[in-house]
Image (tube, rainbow, N blue to C red; front, side):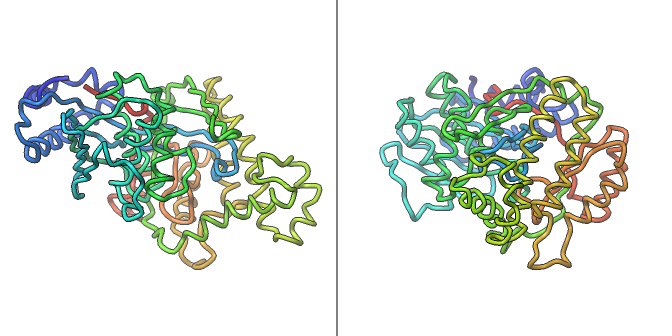
Length: 427
Protein backbone atom coordinates (compact mmCIF):
# COMPACT_ATOMS: atom_id res chain seq x y z
CA UNK A 1 0.00 0.00 0.00
CA UNK A 2 1.18 3.51 -0.81
CA UNK A 3 -0.26 6.98 -1.20
CA UNK A 4 -2.02 7.77 -4.44
CA UNK A 5 0.74 10.26 -5.32
CA UNK A 6 3.34 7.53 -4.80
CA UNK A 7 1.34 5.05 -6.88
CA UNK A 8 1.19 7.53 -9.75
CA UNK A 9 4.95 8.02 -9.46
CA UNK A 10 5.53 4.25 -9.54
CA UNK A 11 3.32 3.91 -12.61
CA UNK A 12 5.11 6.78 -14.36
CA UNK A 13 8.44 5.04 -13.71
CA UNK A 14 7.07 1.70 -14.98
CA UNK A 15 7.75 0.23 -11.56
CA UNK A 16 5.10 -2.50 -11.51
CA UNK A 17 6.69 -4.97 -13.92
CA UNK A 18 7.19 -7.58 -11.19
CA UNK A 19 3.57 -7.30 -10.07
CA UNK A 20 2.27 -7.26 -13.64
CA UNK A 21 4.17 -10.46 -14.50
CA UNK A 22 1.71 -12.45 -12.36
CA UNK A 23 -1.35 -11.29 -14.31
CA UNK A 24 -0.40 -9.88 -17.72
CA UNK A 25 1.67 -10.74 -20.77
CA UNK A 26 4.75 -8.55 -21.13
CA UNK A 27 3.49 -7.09 -24.40
CA UNK A 28 0.43 -5.81 -22.51
CA UNK A 29 2.35 -3.97 -19.78
CA UNK A 30 2.22 -0.55 -21.47
CA UNK A 31 -1.52 -0.73 -22.05
CA UNK A 32 -2.07 -1.68 -18.42
CA UNK A 33 0.18 1.08 -17.09
CA UNK A 34 -2.06 3.50 -18.99
CA UNK A 35 -5.20 1.87 -17.57
CA UNK A 36 -4.02 2.02 -13.96
CA UNK A 37 -2.84 5.61 -14.38
CA UNK A 38 -6.27 6.57 -15.73
CA UNK A 39 -8.21 5.15 -12.77
CA UNK A 40 -5.66 6.69 -10.39
CA UNK A 41 -6.32 10.06 -12.01
CA UNK A 42 -10.06 9.38 -11.81
CA UNK A 43 -9.70 8.66 -8.09
CA UNK A 44 -7.84 11.94 -7.63
CA UNK A 45 -10.50 13.92 -9.46
CA UNK A 46 -13.44 12.36 -7.58
CA UNK A 47 -12.37 12.00 -3.95
CA UNK A 48 -11.16 14.76 -1.64
CA UNK A 49 -7.52 14.88 -0.46
CA UNK A 50 -6.91 11.86 -2.66
CA UNK A 51 -3.21 12.37 -3.24
CA UNK A 52 -2.19 11.59 0.34
CA UNK A 53 -4.61 8.74 0.86
CA UNK A 54 -3.21 5.22 1.08
CA UNK A 55 -4.49 3.17 -1.82
CA UNK A 56 -4.11 -0.33 -3.26
CA UNK A 57 -4.47 -1.69 -6.79
CA UNK A 58 -6.70 -4.67 -7.55
CA UNK A 59 -7.52 -6.85 -10.54
CA UNK A 60 -10.10 -9.55 -11.30
CA UNK A 61 -10.11 -11.44 -14.60
CA UNK A 62 -12.86 -12.32 -16.95
CA UNK A 63 -13.29 -16.00 -17.60
CA UNK A 64 -13.43 -18.32 -20.55
CA UNK A 65 -15.39 -21.56 -20.52
CA UNK A 66 -13.00 -24.14 -21.96
CA UNK A 67 -15.09 -27.28 -21.61
CA UNK A 68 -18.49 -28.23 -20.26
CA UNK A 69 -20.87 -26.17 -22.41
CA UNK A 70 -24.24 -25.84 -20.60
CA UNK A 71 -23.44 -28.38 -17.90
CA UNK A 72 -23.17 -26.39 -14.67
CA UNK A 73 -26.91 -25.75 -14.32
CA UNK A 74 -27.53 -29.51 -14.21
CA UNK A 75 -24.74 -30.08 -11.66
CA UNK A 76 -22.18 -31.22 -14.22
CA UNK A 77 -18.47 -30.72 -14.82
CA UNK A 78 -16.80 -27.62 -16.23
CA UNK A 79 -13.30 -26.69 -17.33
CA UNK A 80 -12.72 -22.92 -17.18
CA UNK A 81 -9.89 -20.41 -17.08
CA UNK A 82 -9.20 -16.87 -15.92
CA UNK A 83 -8.16 -14.66 -18.84
CA UNK A 84 -6.04 -11.57 -19.32
CA UNK A 85 -8.98 -9.22 -19.95
CA UNK A 86 -9.81 -7.91 -16.49
CA UNK A 87 -11.54 -5.39 -14.28
CA UNK A 88 -9.19 -3.20 -12.22
CA UNK A 89 -9.55 -0.84 -9.28
CA UNK A 90 -7.80 1.77 -7.17
CA UNK A 91 -9.28 1.57 -3.67
CA UNK A 92 -8.78 3.18 -0.27
CA UNK A 93 -10.38 2.67 3.13
CA UNK A 94 -12.56 5.39 4.60
CA UNK A 95 -13.85 5.73 8.18
CA UNK A 96 -17.41 6.65 7.17
CA UNK A 97 -18.89 3.16 6.84
CA UNK A 98 -19.79 4.05 3.25
CA UNK A 99 -18.73 2.12 0.14
CA UNK A 100 -18.39 4.28 -2.98
CA UNK A 101 -17.51 2.62 -6.27
CA UNK A 102 -17.18 4.77 -9.39
CA UNK A 103 -16.82 2.63 -12.50
CA UNK A 104 -15.70 4.27 -15.73
CA UNK A 105 -18.73 5.23 -17.78
CA UNK A 106 -21.26 4.61 -15.00
CA UNK A 107 -22.74 6.59 -12.10
CA UNK A 108 -21.29 6.28 -8.60
CA UNK A 109 -22.55 3.29 -6.57
CA UNK A 110 -22.97 4.26 -2.93
CA UNK A 111 -23.80 1.74 -0.19
CA UNK A 112 -23.98 2.22 3.58
CA UNK A 113 -22.57 -0.65 5.63
CA UNK A 114 -25.53 -0.08 7.98
CA UNK A 115 -28.16 -0.52 5.24
CA UNK A 116 -27.64 -3.97 3.77
CA UNK A 117 -31.12 -5.37 3.14
CA UNK A 118 -31.97 -6.36 -0.46
CA UNK A 119 -33.83 -3.65 -2.36
CA UNK A 120 -36.09 -4.58 -5.29
CA UNK A 121 -35.62 -1.14 -6.83
CA UNK A 122 -31.91 -1.97 -7.21
CA UNK A 123 -32.47 -5.27 -9.06
CA UNK A 124 -30.34 -5.34 -12.18
CA UNK A 125 -28.07 -2.51 -11.02
CA UNK A 126 -24.43 -2.61 -9.99
CA UNK A 127 -25.30 -0.92 -6.71
CA UNK A 128 -27.20 -4.08 -5.78
CA UNK A 129 -24.09 -6.15 -6.44
CA UNK A 130 -22.00 -3.97 -4.13
CA UNK A 131 -24.63 -4.04 -1.39
CA UNK A 132 -25.03 -7.80 -1.64
CA UNK A 133 -21.30 -8.49 -1.39
CA UNK A 134 -20.89 -6.27 1.68
CA UNK A 135 -23.97 -7.87 3.25
CA UNK A 136 -22.77 -11.42 2.65
CA UNK A 137 -19.31 -10.68 4.03
CA UNK A 138 -21.00 -9.41 7.20
CA UNK A 139 -23.44 -12.34 7.41
CA UNK A 140 -20.56 -14.79 7.21
CA UNK A 141 -18.70 -13.08 10.04
CA UNK A 142 -16.03 -11.36 7.99
CA UNK A 143 -14.98 -7.75 8.55
CA UNK A 144 -16.58 -5.00 6.49
CA UNK A 145 -16.04 -1.26 6.28
CA UNK A 146 -16.19 1.74 4.04
CA UNK A 147 -13.96 2.30 1.05
CA UNK A 148 -13.72 4.49 -2.01
CA UNK A 149 -12.78 3.00 -5.37
CA UNK A 150 -12.53 3.81 -9.05
CA UNK A 151 -12.72 0.94 -11.50
CA UNK A 152 -12.40 0.17 -15.18
CA UNK A 153 -13.01 -3.02 -17.13
CA UNK A 154 -11.76 -4.54 -20.38
CA UNK A 155 -14.10 -7.53 -20.04
CA UNK A 156 -16.58 -7.30 -22.88
CA UNK A 157 -20.19 -7.04 -21.79
CA UNK A 158 -22.38 -9.73 -23.33
CA UNK A 159 -19.38 -11.64 -24.70
CA UNK A 160 -19.56 -14.73 -22.53
CA UNK A 161 -16.40 -13.56 -20.74
CA UNK A 162 -18.32 -12.73 -17.56
CA UNK A 163 -17.97 -8.99 -17.11
CA UNK A 164 -20.46 -9.01 -14.22
CA UNK A 165 -18.64 -11.80 -12.39
CA UNK A 166 -15.32 -9.98 -12.84
CA UNK A 167 -16.83 -6.88 -11.23
CA UNK A 168 -18.31 -8.92 -8.38
CA UNK A 169 -15.02 -10.67 -7.67
CA UNK A 170 -13.20 -7.33 -7.88
CA UNK A 171 -15.42 -5.83 -5.16
CA UNK A 172 -15.03 -8.96 -3.03
CA UNK A 173 -11.26 -8.90 -3.48
CA UNK A 174 -11.12 -5.25 -2.35
CA UNK A 175 -13.07 -6.04 0.85
CA UNK A 176 -10.95 -9.12 1.41
CA UNK A 177 -7.67 -7.22 1.37
CA UNK A 178 -8.71 -3.90 2.91
CA UNK A 179 -10.54 -5.42 5.88
CA UNK A 180 -9.63 -9.11 6.11
CA UNK A 181 -5.88 -9.20 5.33
CA UNK A 182 -6.62 -11.27 2.22
CA UNK A 183 -7.52 -14.30 4.34
CA UNK A 184 -10.94 -15.02 2.84
CA UNK A 185 -10.37 -17.96 0.42
CA UNK A 186 -11.02 -17.09 -3.21
CA UNK A 187 -13.61 -19.89 -3.65
CA UNK A 188 -15.51 -18.23 -0.79
CA UNK A 189 -15.30 -14.89 -2.63
CA UNK A 190 -16.88 -16.64 -5.62
CA UNK A 191 -19.78 -17.93 -3.53
CA UNK A 192 -20.30 -14.47 -2.02
CA UNK A 193 -20.39 -13.00 -5.52
CA UNK A 194 -22.94 -15.57 -6.67
CA UNK A 195 -25.09 -14.91 -3.60
CA UNK A 196 -25.07 -11.19 -4.35
CA UNK A 197 -26.08 -11.73 -7.96
CA UNK A 198 -28.85 -14.18 -7.00
CA UNK A 199 -30.35 -12.40 -3.99
CA UNK A 200 -29.55 -8.72 -4.54
CA UNK A 201 -29.16 -8.33 -8.30
CA UNK A 202 -32.07 -10.66 -9.02
CA UNK A 203 -30.38 -13.02 -11.48
CA UNK A 204 -30.47 -16.78 -10.76
CA UNK A 205 -26.98 -17.51 -12.08
CA UNK A 206 -24.86 -20.58 -11.36
CA UNK A 207 -21.42 -20.49 -9.76
CA UNK A 208 -19.23 -21.15 -12.80
CA UNK A 209 -18.48 -17.56 -13.79
CA UNK A 210 -17.65 -16.32 -10.31
CA UNK A 211 -15.52 -19.35 -9.49
CA UNK A 212 -13.42 -19.08 -12.63
CA UNK A 213 -12.88 -15.34 -12.13
CA UNK A 214 -11.99 -15.78 -8.48
CA UNK A 215 -9.66 -18.78 -8.73
CA UNK A 216 -8.12 -18.18 -12.16
CA UNK A 217 -5.72 -20.34 -14.15
CA UNK A 218 -7.14 -23.54 -15.59
CA UNK A 219 -9.65 -24.98 -13.13
CA UNK A 220 -11.91 -27.99 -13.28
CA UNK A 221 -15.10 -27.64 -11.29
CA UNK A 222 -17.52 -30.40 -10.29
CA UNK A 223 -20.95 -29.01 -9.43
CA UNK A 224 -22.50 -32.25 -8.16
CA UNK A 225 -23.01 -30.49 -4.81
CA UNK A 226 -23.49 -26.86 -5.78
CA UNK A 227 -23.11 -25.73 -2.17
CA UNK A 228 -19.64 -27.31 -2.09
CA UNK A 229 -18.30 -27.51 -5.65
CA UNK A 230 -15.10 -29.49 -6.02
CA UNK A 231 -12.45 -27.20 -7.52
CA UNK A 232 -9.13 -28.42 -8.81
CA UNK A 233 -6.44 -26.13 -10.17
CA UNK A 234 -4.70 -27.66 -13.17
CA UNK A 235 -0.95 -27.34 -13.37
CA UNK A 236 -0.53 -26.47 -17.03
CA UNK A 237 1.55 -23.63 -18.42
CA UNK A 238 -0.50 -22.38 -21.36
CA UNK A 239 2.23 -19.88 -22.28
CA UNK A 240 4.42 -22.82 -23.33
CA UNK A 241 1.77 -24.48 -25.51
CA UNK A 242 2.70 -22.54 -28.65
CA UNK A 243 -0.90 -21.37 -28.97
CA UNK A 244 -2.97 -18.32 -28.18
CA UNK A 245 -6.56 -18.25 -26.99
CA UNK A 246 -8.56 -16.09 -29.40
CA UNK A 247 -12.11 -14.94 -28.70
CA UNK A 248 -14.03 -13.79 -31.78
CA UNK A 249 -16.96 -11.48 -31.19
CA UNK A 250 -19.33 -12.02 -34.11
CA UNK A 251 -21.47 -9.05 -32.99
CA UNK A 252 -24.62 -11.16 -32.93
CA UNK A 253 -27.34 -9.66 -30.73
CA UNK A 254 -28.36 -11.35 -27.47
CA UNK A 255 -31.73 -9.59 -27.48
CA UNK A 256 -34.80 -11.83 -27.45
CA UNK A 257 -32.72 -14.92 -26.63
CA UNK A 258 -33.75 -15.39 -23.00
CA UNK A 259 -36.16 -18.18 -23.83
CA UNK A 260 -33.53 -19.93 -25.99
CA UNK A 261 -31.14 -20.05 -23.06
CA UNK A 262 -33.90 -21.09 -20.68
CA UNK A 263 -34.98 -23.89 -23.01
CA UNK A 264 -31.56 -25.58 -22.84
CA UNK A 265 -31.70 -25.86 -19.08
CA UNK A 266 -35.44 -26.51 -19.08
CA UNK A 267 -35.25 -29.39 -21.53
CA UNK A 268 -32.35 -31.02 -19.69
CA UNK A 269 -34.26 -30.76 -16.43
CA UNK A 270 -37.44 -32.08 -18.06
CA UNK A 271 -35.54 -35.26 -18.96
CA UNK A 272 -34.36 -35.54 -15.37
CA UNK A 273 -37.95 -35.05 -14.18
CA UNK A 274 -39.08 -37.85 -16.52
CA UNK A 275 -36.90 -40.15 -14.41
CA UNK A 276 -38.10 -38.66 -11.12
CA UNK A 277 -35.00 -36.52 -10.56
CA UNK A 278 -34.30 -32.78 -10.45
CA UNK A 279 -31.14 -32.57 -12.57
CA UNK A 280 -29.42 -34.77 -15.13
CA UNK A 281 -26.47 -35.44 -12.84
CA UNK A 282 -28.84 -37.66 -10.83
CA UNK A 283 -29.86 -39.72 -13.89
CA UNK A 284 -27.79 -42.50 -15.46
CA UNK A 285 -26.83 -41.87 -19.08
CA UNK A 286 -27.68 -45.45 -20.05
CA UNK A 287 -31.24 -44.98 -18.78
CA UNK A 288 -31.69 -41.99 -21.09
CA UNK A 289 -30.47 -44.06 -24.03
CA UNK A 290 -32.56 -47.10 -23.03
CA UNK A 291 -35.76 -45.07 -22.77
CA UNK A 292 -34.95 -42.57 -25.55
CA UNK A 293 -38.14 -43.46 -27.50
CA UNK A 294 -40.37 -42.84 -24.49
CA UNK A 295 -38.59 -39.60 -23.56
CA UNK A 296 -38.80 -38.38 -27.16
CA UNK A 297 -42.50 -39.17 -27.34
CA UNK A 298 -43.16 -37.12 -24.21
CA UNK A 299 -40.59 -34.32 -24.51
CA UNK A 300 -39.33 -34.29 -28.08
CA UNK A 301 -36.08 -35.52 -29.58
CA UNK A 302 -34.22 -32.29 -28.89
CA UNK A 303 -34.55 -32.80 -25.13
CA UNK A 304 -32.92 -36.23 -25.52
CA UNK A 305 -30.13 -34.76 -27.66
CA UNK A 306 -29.45 -32.04 -25.12
CA UNK A 307 -29.37 -34.59 -22.30
CA UNK A 308 -26.85 -36.73 -24.21
CA UNK A 309 -24.81 -33.59 -24.89
CA UNK A 310 -24.68 -33.03 -21.12
CA UNK A 311 -23.23 -36.50 -20.47
CA UNK A 312 -20.79 -36.23 -23.33
CA UNK A 313 -19.51 -32.86 -22.13
CA UNK A 314 -18.90 -34.24 -18.63
CA UNK A 315 -16.84 -37.06 -20.14
CA UNK A 316 -14.88 -34.63 -22.30
CA UNK A 317 -14.10 -32.34 -19.35
CA UNK A 318 -12.50 -35.30 -17.58
CA UNK A 319 -10.51 -36.17 -20.70
CA UNK A 320 -9.50 -32.54 -21.32
CA UNK A 321 -8.25 -32.22 -17.75
CA UNK A 322 -6.23 -35.43 -18.07
CA UNK A 323 -4.75 -34.21 -21.36
CA UNK A 324 -3.60 -30.95 -19.79
CA UNK A 325 -2.13 -32.72 -16.78
CA UNK A 326 -0.19 -34.98 -19.16
CA UNK A 327 0.91 -31.94 -21.19
CA UNK A 328 -0.80 -33.50 -24.22
CA UNK A 329 -2.06 -30.37 -25.94
CA UNK A 330 -2.80 -32.14 -29.23
CA UNK A 331 -5.33 -34.44 -27.55
CA UNK A 332 -6.72 -31.45 -25.69
CA UNK A 333 -7.37 -29.63 -28.99
CA UNK A 334 -9.12 -32.68 -30.46
CA UNK A 335 -11.44 -32.73 -27.46
CA UNK A 336 -12.16 -29.01 -27.85
CA UNK A 337 -13.30 -29.63 -31.43
CA UNK A 338 -15.49 -32.57 -30.34
CA UNK A 339 -17.03 -30.39 -27.64
CA UNK A 340 -17.86 -27.72 -30.20
CA UNK A 341 -19.46 -30.23 -32.53
CA UNK A 342 -21.59 -31.58 -29.71
CA UNK A 343 -22.80 -28.05 -28.91
CA UNK A 344 -23.63 -27.50 -32.58
CA UNK A 345 -25.31 -30.86 -33.33
CA UNK A 346 -26.84 -31.95 -30.04
CA UNK A 347 -27.18 -28.98 -27.71
CA UNK A 348 -28.05 -26.83 -30.73
CA UNK A 349 -27.02 -23.47 -29.26
CA UNK A 350 -25.07 -22.04 -32.20
CA UNK A 351 -28.03 -20.20 -33.75
CA UNK A 352 -31.64 -19.56 -32.84
CA UNK A 353 -34.49 -21.24 -34.68
CA UNK A 354 -36.35 -17.92 -34.47
CA UNK A 355 -34.10 -16.49 -37.17
CA UNK A 356 -32.36 -19.35 -38.98
CA UNK A 357 -30.91 -17.17 -41.75
CA UNK A 358 -28.90 -15.18 -39.20
CA UNK A 359 -25.93 -17.39 -38.25
CA UNK A 360 -22.79 -15.38 -37.43
CA UNK A 361 -21.50 -18.02 -34.98
CA UNK A 362 -21.92 -20.74 -37.62
CA UNK A 363 -19.95 -18.66 -40.10
CA UNK A 364 -17.17 -17.99 -37.60
CA UNK A 365 -16.92 -21.69 -36.80
CA UNK A 366 -16.87 -22.60 -40.50
CA UNK A 367 -14.07 -20.15 -41.32
CA UNK A 368 -12.16 -21.32 -38.24
CA UNK A 369 -12.31 -24.89 -39.49
CA UNK A 370 -11.04 -23.81 -42.91
CA UNK A 371 -8.08 -21.99 -41.36
CA UNK A 372 -7.25 -24.24 -38.40
CA UNK A 373 -8.11 -27.81 -39.36
CA UNK A 374 -5.24 -30.08 -38.36
CA UNK A 375 -3.54 -27.19 -36.56
CA UNK A 376 -5.78 -25.58 -33.93
CA UNK A 377 -9.20 -25.93 -32.33
CA UNK A 378 -12.50 -24.03 -32.30
CA UNK A 379 -15.89 -24.14 -30.55
CA UNK A 380 -18.87 -22.03 -29.54
CA UNK A 381 -18.15 -20.00 -26.42
CA UNK A 382 -20.45 -19.56 -23.43
CA UNK A 383 -24.21 -19.61 -23.71
CA UNK A 384 -24.22 -19.51 -27.49
CA UNK A 385 -26.96 -18.49 -29.96
CA UNK A 386 -25.09 -15.20 -30.51
CA UNK A 387 -21.91 -13.47 -29.40
CA UNK A 388 -18.58 -15.27 -29.40
CA UNK A 389 -16.61 -18.31 -30.44
CA UNK A 390 -13.33 -19.52 -28.99
CA UNK A 391 -10.26 -20.71 -30.87
CA UNK A 392 -6.89 -22.12 -29.88
CA UNK A 393 -4.62 -20.79 -32.61
CA UNK A 394 -0.95 -21.70 -33.19
CA UNK A 395 1.09 -18.60 -32.48
CA UNK A 396 2.43 -18.43 -36.02
CA UNK A 397 -1.13 -18.32 -37.41
CA UNK A 398 -2.59 -15.73 -35.05
CA UNK A 399 -2.05 -12.85 -37.48
CA UNK A 400 -3.60 -14.70 -40.41
CA UNK A 401 -6.52 -15.95 -38.34
CA UNK A 402 -7.38 -12.61 -36.77
CA UNK A 403 -7.04 -10.78 -40.09
CA UNK A 404 -9.57 -13.13 -41.71
CA UNK A 405 -11.99 -12.77 -38.81
CA UNK A 406 -11.66 -8.98 -38.72
CA UNK A 407 -12.44 -8.83 -42.42
CA UNK A 408 -15.76 -10.56 -41.71
CA UNK A 409 -16.77 -9.31 -38.27
CA UNK A 410 -14.94 -5.98 -37.91
CA UNK A 411 -11.65 -4.59 -36.68
CA UNK A 412 -12.67 -4.87 -33.03
CA UNK A 413 -13.87 -8.47 -33.22
CA UNK A 414 -10.77 -10.40 -32.12
CA UNK A 415 -9.18 -10.66 -28.68
CA UNK A 416 -5.92 -12.53 -28.27
CA UNK A 417 -5.77 -13.67 -24.66
CA UNK A 418 -3.59 -15.41 -22.13
CA UNK A 419 -4.56 -17.49 -19.07
CA UNK A 420 -3.93 -15.83 -15.69
CA UNK A 421 -4.52 -16.08 -11.95
CA UNK A 422 -7.78 -15.02 -10.34
CA UNK A 423 -8.82 -11.98 -8.32
CA UNK A 424 -5.79 -10.42 -6.69
CA UNK A 425 -4.25 -7.39 -5.03
CA UNK A 426 -1.75 -6.12 -7.60
CA UNK A 427 -0.04 -3.60 -5.28
